[in-house]
Image (cartoon, rainbow, N blue to C red; front, side, top):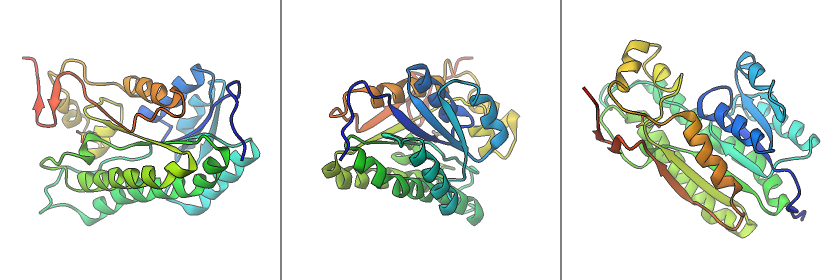
Length: 255
Ligand code: 8X3
């Protein structure tokens, strides 16, 4: 078993790194001296990220077993990682359960649950061998509180939340720290627009009058803090909301 020394540079894989929280996290970690493997499906969006020193872009769909195996081979060659940040995920639709579309639910389960499983399984042996591994899963407040129209996203994030708890119990004996970050209302370029199928006007309304929704950079700062703490310190569940969102159903709007 290879133990880290305090002078060793930290190395992470961040999935879903081409935009939003993933991109902000990759940038923030590299600004703190980390080497970051930034994985995402869209090569063209990774290009600008790759201009930052310390970021190695890797094109990868987290739901594809062969692509994840290829990424693991590249990362193994390049010296491995000590930290896995499972950020890839997303929501599709705001239908009621009665009206929900099976294909939307399938996509949400694929990316939020099975993608996380796929990447985690691929990298656990490396993290175990490292001796002081960290897995950080980005779930959501939607993974612990249901809301109308949450449907498939609630179900998928509850799934990811459950899996994260199980992983923590199972991997503690391998000295792997498992952190769950559960953001509430975060305004990013893509999350709500994608969920509302490109209806940017409707997406804009979600944030109307909300003073200071969280930003991707806010979440990246919290993630960086959590993974930079001494390894024996596990912030096992971090719920983050803007002050204006006192609870899932209580959002303060001005005007
Ligand atoms: C996003 C939080 O409240 O839109 O993960 O479901 S919410």
